[in-house]
Length: 274
Image (cartoon, rainbow, N blue to C red; front, side, top):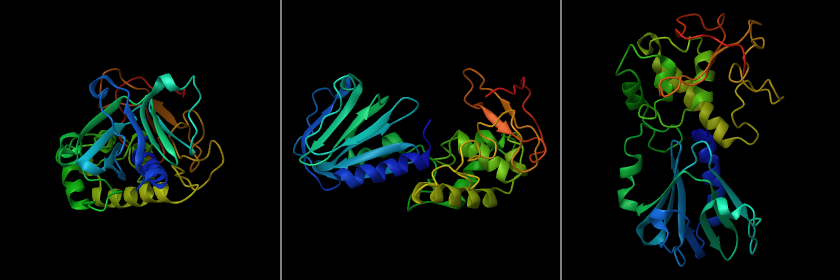
């Protein structure tokens, strides 16, 4: 699933293509908004809150989208359409007299009044990539249940919006914590400081997207995420993984190095496969 940094970078690309442009064709190919016509509206800006994208138009309208696991956006040049075989998967068409943007297989497509944006993102915690980032509020939310596992807290978008599975695993490694360490035993402000710097660097520095080790070579870009069964890049211990637990939002695939991250381990079978 895309994380806050990837969605932020995508919003910047869409802004570069469409911001300030008037739509000559605007279509939402979802049942709830099949009759909506966005032609004639001007694209004001694209903003993000965590993994959610808000495309604001003139006339006080906002398009709320979320990529989840299946969605993507693509931009085409003036006068060009996507290949015919791709068009059945398009859920959003935003065409100007210049570039166009297409939302493909988007599982969330909602049109609402801009004043009502809180209805779709108001439940989210502070976002490190937004100007209104509030580290004290983020820390308060993260420590509300001191016994909760650190990895679960990092994945909870109500605590901090934008950290996904990759960042949750990598931050646990970088701070030397087992992913199942109770959050009450963690220096949360220090962890947040690192996480904020890492997420902002990833989102804004060319070539740095989700490279947590500083090494861009394939297979060495991450400390533990996706490296099950391979030697830890720091100590050489075999990286381990716990697979997802079906229908349990607290558990996603979790990687860790038992030597660099001492502490509790989830009470489920451990696999060495990716």
